[in-house]
Image (cartoon, rainbow, N blue to C red):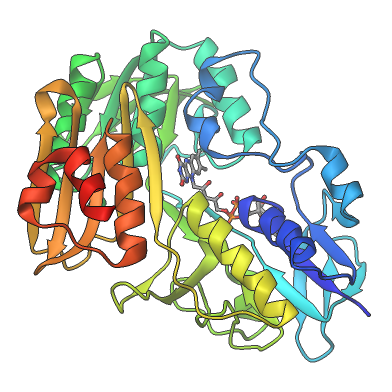
Length: 404
Ligand code: FAD
């Protein structure tokens, strides 16, 4: 028995290995990761890690977990090629490894911005703990930072560095923050609060080039002709899925490795999970590729069940969180197609939620510092329950009563 080989030791890969054992899989489980670290939590990297010189990565599982569950974790293993006909793969360095099932959990990587000056020292992006260490080291020696891109990660970094005393300018090409990811009301709230905390935000603005001296970034030039001094420029304009391995192996790729409801790719014994997988979503009927810890975790649990033979269809409620300064944003459900919104709570108090409906059906809830609404949303969407306008207006107590 060659067992299950998992490529990528991030949130999805580690969960898949753990779930295989929980589901009673007793063959070999080999977990290959190209990083050298013990697999770690990514969300803290843009939040607490970069402001604390002593912070260490938080392991997803302790070292004993892997040995205790006979999971053969091999750090520093870069997979270069998959041979689907031979059910084997090759590693950098030439080793080959055969598998019965292969799980691709290769995640995603920061989108590259083709700009004069992006190769200068001090121009950085954030995906791994190695990237986070670079940002932390550079920020110790610079007062001015430019963040290109007003998405979740860019804004988290901006808030964290501003709280640490840096002068931060966020440059966003669109006329609002957070792209189309959240309701305009929330995007505007985040903008106002970040500005009040000292972050400068330039909307409808792009960076045309980055200037440097002696190979190191010194300033970023905006489309409006302004020269923003900055020894550190962080590019946070989204990610692209790591699909090269799958593509060259002939798997179907369409904005991610295409999988069915049980996480199988177009090759039956190869599954894909996490940031790199695209699929038809049960809630909206549309094709999605989600980038969240929840998505990585739930898909990996299902992939393990598929391999041991009791898969079923993916139907987990999607949820996500982001901490931007003093705002805990929590999203549950998908807002695609939302045609009616209801506000609950008061933005002036920095505590409110936006309920999204499609007709009378609850589609999503986006919350700022209202964890009870978020938790109730997970419950309601899981049950397929849609509250009335009166119940939403009645707040968490009324929603709890309606669910009881
Ligand atoms: P990853 O965790 O990226 O793991 C993929 C692994 O595969 C990586 O280690 C990669 O190096 C490795 N790999 C890739 N190719 C190969 C290869 N050929 N051979 C071997 N190994 C390979 N989500 C939330 O829900 N909430 C948050 O607050 C949040 N904050 C975030 C903050 C940051 C800074 C980042 C980067 C992400 C954040 N996310 C957050 C997103 C979340 O971390 C991802 O959705 C999640 O990590 C996806 O898991 P994954 O296993 O698919 O990918």
